[in-house]
Length: 266
Image 1 (cartoon, rainbow, N blue to C red):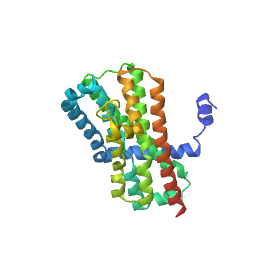
Image 2: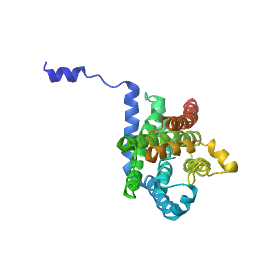
Image 3: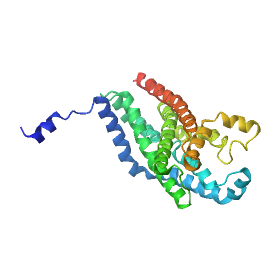
Image 4: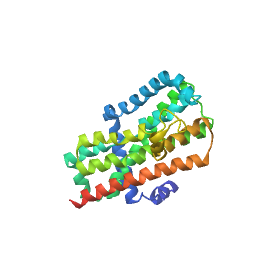
């Protein structure tokens, strides 16, 4: 037996769960080019508001102590681009067609059915973040943390997008309704406006400042902004990671509880 044959023979196959995870994620990623109408708005809308906000509020922001409003707004555009992006609508289609129920009686691991979709979502939100960062660079936004900071910036954005995916999946598995899934982004609206999207926390006052202090998006934006114009701040990044972890635990718990409930009905 040749060396090549021995290497081929001795190469272990992926574990069952990993193989299932890759198969589900691969199917989800292959479907994206056929469904660009659901992806393109997630990119165009944040880019539009980024351009509008920078163009209309830059002068006003100087009174609030914001020196570079483009750098201040770039994380906001990123968060809007990645939040709520998921394959939950496709999951509803699979549920309605009966395909998902057939998967439930197959040997495929139940958790892989959901985690595979989330892996695809993570790849998608990273891909959506890159054009926003490129636009920021074209407009003159520079990262004081360099290339490493850009990589961390993209990873943090991707992790936030991943953390939020549990909510639309929970709704999809619980209701099987495309309308309910499409409205899941409304869950993010209070998070996005009752925070530091347009002004620093120090400038806010009254009840808005109190709410912003308990809003995880505040610490997400703080961490992303620190990578652009503050530098490597471990304490700030730790708060950002904690905020993401809290949302991830809540949303994933809801999603996998909904999955367990659907499985138990079969």
